Image 1 (cartoon, rainbow, N blue to C red):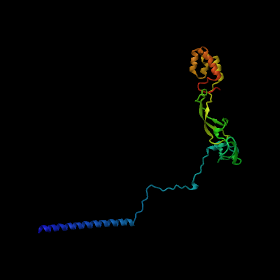
Image 2 (tube, rainbow, N blue to C red):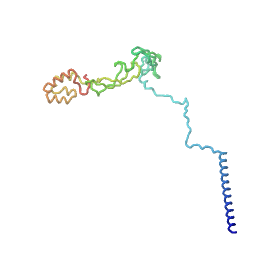
Image 3 (tube, helix red, strand yellow):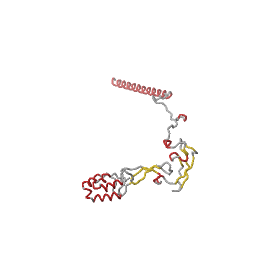
Image 4 (cartoon, rainbow, N blue to C red):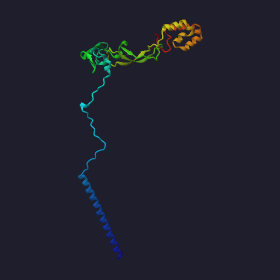
Length: 251
């Protein structure tokens, strides 16, 4: 009888513990649901971010600063002169790309802002229909090169940057590159070189004058190649075949 009573007592305790655990679980779910409903019914206001200041990108038109600097072309433009005689950098013209090359064309131009001139600001200019790089050499100026040889075969060329003169109107860019023949001088005179070759050529004075000191030493110690080298140099300098050592032209 003792064993069945003990087994029944254990079963009762297990049932009581199971009942209490289920009751505890149900009560916890109820409290969680009530807390979530309270949060939904009373939402919290969003917290403002610290240190962030709202900015607007819109600037009123009355507060936009006006440009006060002077355009660079204004310093190149003559003041109080006729508008029709302003340099090309001081006027803006409507390009006429349908003109016939080499034929005269009429362009409608007007003075640029902040350019002061006399007469109507809108005027017409007569010019020849051609691009700036097609102008004759007398209408533009180019940079000179001092590192190429003018006396060489074939004749050397160099890349120059050319700019159209102020009074000349043309189409396209007024500054352009151009391949030109070497044409510069270092101050050597042809008459002086020829005179030294005739009088003191046997001592290499002509070669020393032209900057060719190696050849000058050779003529000096060989007495002008016994006269043969002297005669040859007179002919070569006379026809201009022998020139300065730096490659420049005679004056």
